[in-house]
Image 1 (spheres, rainbow, N blue to C red):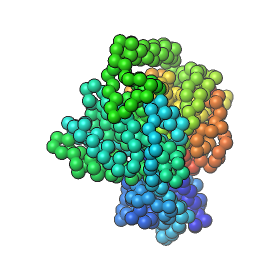
Image 2: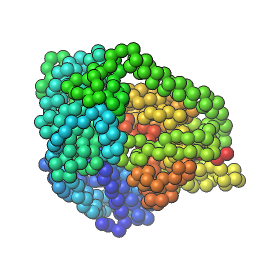
Image 3: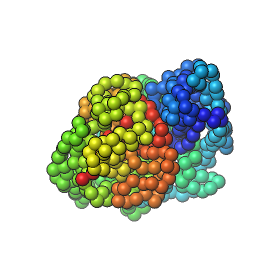
Image 4: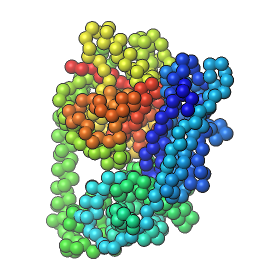
Length: 549
C-alpha cells in the first residue's frame, strides 16, 4: 500500500448482502484527484448490487470517489450479493489517483476473504407458538429481504408459491396465520442446520395493503443467515416472478428495506397458542387446546390494545411541555427532558443488545442540523458540496466539527456546547416512541419526515422542510448523517447506561446517526448507526449541536 494513501475496511452481513465498508484517507500534504475504486472479485460468486451513498458515479465498472484533500478521507459502503455459497473468496480493490503533479499512482487494498455459508436444513420435530417466540427472542442474528409486488395479486396463490419454494429446502412448515379478510398472511418454518444443529426460524409475510412479500429469518450465525437469505431469496424471487399469473404478476421485483422485520400476526397470539378471533391458524395443532372463539378472547384482546393506547397517551402528556426553545449564536435549541428509554434494536447486529439508558440531566439540542450560514458565521468558510445558506452544512469531518464547537465555547466563555452522545441523540430522535422511526414503523410515511434515497433527488434539502418529531426536532431521519461523540463499537455490550459518551472502542472511528439523502430508509431509523473515520468527509456528513444546562 502506498504510504500516502491509507485504506481501511470492514464487512458485515446485512439483509442477505455482504456490506463492505471502506474508507480512503489522504495522508499526503497535497490534494489527490481522480480517486477511483476498481473492485476485483470472482463474478461467479459475487455481484455488486448497489453502493451507499448513491451520489458516487461509476465509469467503466469503477466507482469514482473524486478528489480528497490532504488529511481528509472518503467512505463508501458497497453491497455485494452472494450468487453462490462459498467457503472463501478474495475481494480486492485497486485504488488509482493523481498526485499533486498530475501523475497517476495506484495502491492495492489488502485482500479481504469473504465466506457465505448456505445451510443444509433439517427438521426433526414440531414446535408450538410459544417455542417460536422464544427462538425469535433469543437467536442473535436476524435479517430479512422484502420484495415489492404489483397490486391486485392473489394472496392464497402467492402463499402457495412461497410454501413450495421454502419447503424444497427440507424445512418443516409449522404454522400459517392469516386474517379473516385474507389480506395478511404469515407462514412459519423451523429447522436446524445439519452440521452444527443450530436453530433456524423462517417466516414468509404477505401484506396485500403494502404490496410486499417479506422473507425473514433468524439463527445463531450471521454467515449462515446471509447464505440462507441469499439462497432462498433467489428461489423465492424467481418463483414469484415466473409463476404468478394474470393481474398478480410481479413487476420490478426489488430488494427493499424491511418494513416488518418483527413478528406481526404471531405477536397477537399468546405463548400457549391462543389467538384472537380475527386470526385463523391453519395446518397446525395447538397443543394445549382448541382455539377459543368467544367473548372472553375478544375482551382480552381489546384490553391488551387499550392498555397500550393508555400508555402512549401517558407518554404524550409527560412530554407535552418539552417544547421550550432558545436561540444562541443563530442556532435554535429545543429543550430535551431527562428520562429513560430502551436504546438499540434487534434488526442489525451492531444495534444489539437492546438496553435501558437513563438520561439523568436534561439538555438543549439543535432544532435542525447546523446550516451552512451558521457554519460560515463561526468558521468563515464553507466546503459543502451542495451550496445554500439554509442547507445543512456537510463535507465536514468529526475533527472539523470539534474546531467549530471549540470556537463556539471560546466565544461564549463557558464550555457548554458539544456534540450529543450516541445515547442522547437516539433518545432525542425517538422522542418517547418505541418504534423504528419517531412517527411509527411504516416506511411509507418516511417521506413526510425526512429526505432519503427514494425522495431526495440525490441532494440535501433546506432544514426544517419535513415534519418534526413530537419533541420539535426536524431532520432526525435523513438529509445528512450526524456526528456524535462516541467511539465506534460493533455492538452495545458494555455500553454505559447513563447516556454518557462511550470512549471504549476504536478512537479513529466515530459513530454517525440518522441516515442521509443518499441512503435507504433502513438507515434513517432512530436506532441505525454507522462508523466513519475522524477525518472522513462527504456530502452526506453533517451534525447538530448540544447545549448543556
